[in-house]
Length: 229
Ligand code: HEC
Ligand code: HEC
Image 1: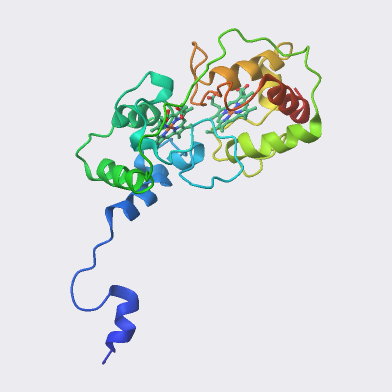
Image 2 (image 1 turned 90 degrees about the vertical axis):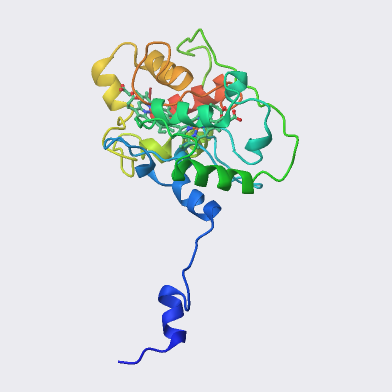
């Protein structure tokens, strides 16, 4: 059979080996949950971060990583090396082993982030963690706004409230039912703890935390009223 070069080029390229730029491979890694070595992980970097000059209207727990390679420090100043900031997410949220700076996937991720960092210098971004959490019962919520904020902040992982339809994996709780089943009297307080502290402050799990810069107390109260906490 004779196959023309024009047909072949679509499938394999024609005449010589084809190399995919490292930044393109890195963009794929960014959305690839298998970048983590954990068989239980369902999250990718893109579950919690965007990399965009004109970001979509999302309230991600992690910052937009556009220009990230020029920031003087990361994680509100707690991390100074990009690889450490990334590995903190990898080990705490994605259950994987830390990437070594010279392995292919780490280099590809770096090339992708560097290709999306045109402006230097770029400022350190603040990360204000709320330490003392209350159930926010003093803040009447707005359910309509709550739905909007839930859609931009929580739905990518939790899916629909009450059913969990569309959730990231079966490891993600169905809210509010799963919480009400275990903590019938303090579910609202537990929900605020999860949002403000994620897995930290001895709470456990794999959920990320939301700083004051990402969600205000009022927005959390709105979400809680919409979800039914
Ligand atoms: C479950 C959510 C989650 C996942 C998954 C995740 N991160 Fe993060 N990441 C965060 C949060 C929360 C922070 C702290 C807020 C911040 O500094 O952006 C953070 C911080 C960072 C920072 C520091 C940004 C800055 O300027 O402070 C970098 C860089 C980063 N993550 C890269 C990655 C990469 C690359 C991946 C994939 C390997 C990843 N993250 C996966 C939630 C996540
Ligand atoms: C990156 C994915 C992710 C995002 C985004 C996320 N969650 Fe979660 N959440 C989880 C996972 C996974 C669990 C179960 C494991 C754990 O406790 O960490 C959980 C657990 C919870 C629980 C505790 C349920 C229980 O009783 O066990 C509550 C409440 C909750 N999330 C609320 C929220 C709200 C509200 C938002 C948005 C502001 C949100 N989550 C955003 C992944 C996420």
